[in-house]
Amino acid sequence: MAGLYVHIPFCAKRCLYCDFFSTTQLGQRERYVEAVVREIRMRRNETDEPIRTIYLGGGTPSQLPAVSIARILDAAGRDGKEEITMELNPADATPEYLSELKRTGIQRLSIGVQSFQDELLLLIGRRHNAAQAIRAIRMAQEAGFENISIDLIYALPTQTMAQWMADIDRAIEMKIQHISSYGLMYEEGTALTLMRDRGQITPTDEETENEMYDSLCERLRQAGFVHYEVSNFALPGLEAKHNSSYWDGTPYIGVGAGAHSYTGNTRSWNPDDLEAYLRGIENGSLEREKEVLSEKDLYNERVMLGLRTNKGIPESYLDVHNGREVVTGLTRKQQWLRRTEDGRLVATQKGIHVLNRIIEDLMI
Image 1 (cartoon, helix red, strand yellow):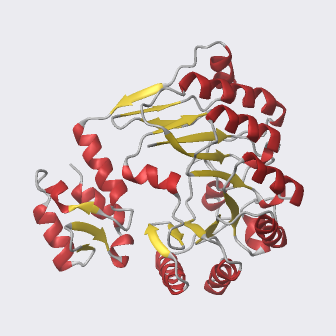
Image 2: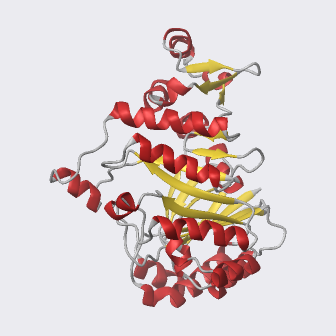
């Protein structure tokens, strides 16, 4: 099976922390949808495996009207899909829009809440407030969406532990099925990084960030969530099928400006330039960059991605790569990895805090 990712780069405004490819050129939306539809048709036979999941991400997909979403799904073939997900900004949610999205075949919503604290939302440049986030979730539930994910960010400047725990508890109270939660990253070139460098904001210290993460994991465990990937938690059986494909090596096709694709031994990506992408599709000459992965690359990716999940990696991966001594040290001395009964290596809670170091030790 394979997945289809559709990148919708349009944003009404850019968030201060985001480094994903996006644009505020909203006047190009119709032209862009036409290009995406054309690209899907051009590449529908790129993989021998049937498309089982579709994910519309961004950017802000909810900047497109439902009729445009329907056009994209028609081109992709919405029937028989195991999962169709779309990202939604709370500020775009109305009962009418959500009902229209439900009729397009969208099965799952990923709502970019980030926080239920107004002062924190304002600090990071979100265009919704806490009340809008709560209303968006409730409206989605009333529209019939039974699989809703929300994003939450921790380690925000000025964020207190009390605020963070209140955000987690709010999500649980609202009967959310899935939570993706990330520690704030200061990405190069973003406005928030510039503010940090100017001394306008102070980053959260590492000890507090780790405490916030551990509190998140424990609170959601108590609430019945499965911690199936470092940053992702779901009620049993509601793990994100599409996102899981990124971690288990499932092929996927990425369409739209800046979108990446993976075939199993190659990666390719579209230009992250709106006009270059549009012209390339319209002229039938879109140039995608491509990378052929070596055996070493594939091994390193299996280690890096597998150790992010609760399934871990088979210990046999390391038998032919001289990783035995390293693993012995990580499991016996520092308790960063544990062995499962079926011979897999999984990061412990303590190990997740130093996961990058573990992965570096095991790479070749």
